[in-house]
Length: 196
Image 1: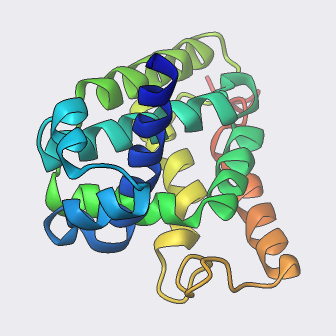
Image 2: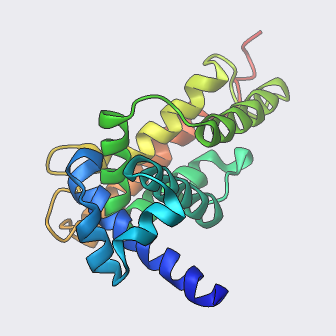
Image 3: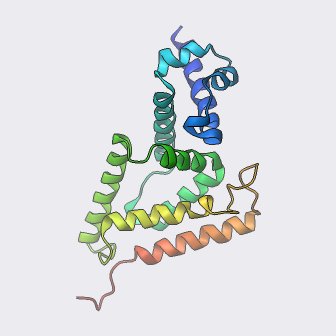
């Protein structure tokens, strides 16, 4: 019984991810989610509550998957930025989901805030140890790293713009990935030796 309910929950979350990434919260339809998941619509309310709570569950799952797939490494922020870029290339709908979240539910969830706070603290400690230049505040460093990693996916004509998600050729993606990594390397380089 538990295995069946776990499989149903997973199908519902998968279907809801696609629905929310395509239509946002306001445009998403619980009927379509249930039909795609081959589940009873009532189970959505039983397992997740209302549509907004289902969206929260989908977003939480996406954040957890991202954290597992792309571990944060304060000592290799260029590599981290490249890995985030790669993660988005493989999952272009994720950026659309995030953009819908920002449009329809601005602000951070507790899980989002906690994740960013931990990363900011790690950047700050690296700055205090002299491994990352402290000319830019830690929160801004993290924002720039994430922004550079995600920028191409929100840009008009970017890789997530096409129907298939990634219409760019592999060579073009590689060029942009290299630009992201190099930009982050410059932002996060240790402070110059001559700066006092």
